[in-house]
Image (cartoon, rainbow, N blue to C red; front, top):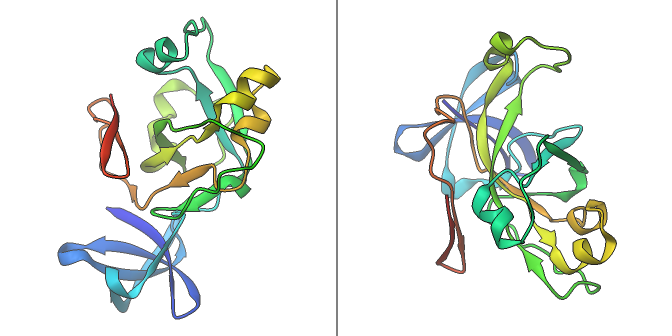
Length: 191
C-alpha cells in the first residue's frame, strides 16, 4: 500500500493510492487503525503534504560510503545520530528556501523509515512489525555552515531542509532499493 497526506478543498486528509492514480480517502489513524471512505480523488485534485507529521526526525550521518568519501570523512565505528526538527519538513515538489547566510547547499537522498509505534529497548526480531513503511527523504544541508560550526544542527535545521514523500510505501524491501536524486532533471545521486 501507498499512504499519503494531502490537501483537498482546504482540508487535510489521508489517503491510499489505488490503481490509475486514484486516491481513496481514509479516516482514522494510518499508523494503527483506519477505514477507507467512499471519497476518491485524482492526483490533479490534490496538493501533496508531507506524508506524516513526526514529533522528531532522527537521522544517521555518514551512512553511505560514497557520500562519506565525497565529503572526505571516515565512516564512524558507531552510528552518527543527529536530529532535524519537524519544521524542516516540506512536501514532494515544494521549493527549498536558500538561507541568506549560506553559500553552499547540498542534497542527500535518503530512505526514511516511518515508525508506527514509539519504540524503545526493542528486540531486533521485533523491529519490522513496528515499521509502517518507507518514503523518500532529502537531508538538505548548508555544507559551508556544517564545516564552519563543526556540529550539524544549524546546517541541517533550516525550514524546508527536509523534502519528503510523496508516499509511505508499506511493501518495500529496504535491502533491495536504488536511491536516486535528480536536481533540475539531472541525475545527481545514484546509490
